[in-house]
Length: 118
Length: 343
Image 1 (cartoon, rainbow over the protein chains, first blue to last red):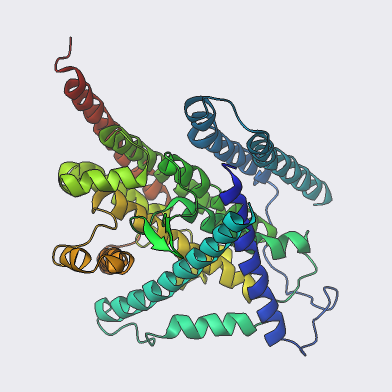
Image 2: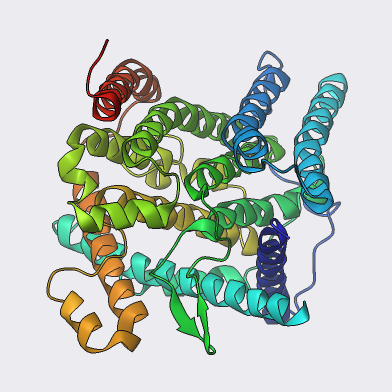
């Protein structure tokens, strides 16, 4: 029950985002959506190969994961939840933590793949 | 079970609407202040934000063939908005009040560790800024997004040191307790002026207000990492920035300016008409917020912009040692207060 307000609030924000996107779609209805193949952007400055995006992305990702762990998860688990965590809270916390791990892996893979192609 | 959940959903939607209305009013005040302080150089209308809102809503974002992931490109601004809005869940807007016959807290998630929760969740939005910059596959947006992240890291650490010192000083990480202590004694601004000064400077760097907005540089680089976005994508990124400004300003008010407590003169209204508690406290909070927004704009037209390396040097070599000194002083003071001696 502890984390239920967070989940409900998250769904409410997602609902607001969906409403705004629907309204925007409705307002611009009738305009022909251009397919990705038709737009040929003029030549632009591409990313330089020596910018190690993967390094920066992964470092910052890790830093903010540690920030999350230090300032919320650990104090909550060890100081406030003296009687142990409920199952829903544990699952929610594992889900939120794994979001970072999965995001880090995906970001690393995408950057690696992009590097290969360039 | 269903009734409390419905009540929670209704309260969440009301608070989201309240925050968005406050953001709108805050933008009007900022536009007025910009016209006032720019000495005639900025001639946009005061209702410019409203016109921009409708324009962005009606625009159709183009799709480029070179973007690696179109789904992530569409999702990232919405994710940025989501993570910017999430910390509002623990911010109190007034004392507990009566809603539909039951006493209700003004925040959605009532905890005793609201401060920790707020600063943990507020760190997440910068990740989506990084993604937003990188997904454009262009140099300027990517570099500017990385600069925004570095700026945030270098100024967030002094901010968090000040937060720790305030938690130690007030002996609580609950916003309501902190505001109650200020009501009984004086505002935190008079008790911890150095902490207030460092927090204010770090806050301006955190939310990217001039003179700390080198990464965005709206006028010179057309918003840098925002440059490749338009339509609802840009709207979400823009709104996320404004919501971030609002919630950090409110946190500063809660720590140092007495929070939502009624200003002198208005507190008599609460004793005469107890039903007007939410309105009077909301009005007091709004007046304090308006003063701070006018102050941001005044500082924008008073100082030259920081260069990126100068900003990081300032954050790491000036603000950080000062914040550590403040923390040390608070620790020593609290130890002496608790035990009455040092050895």
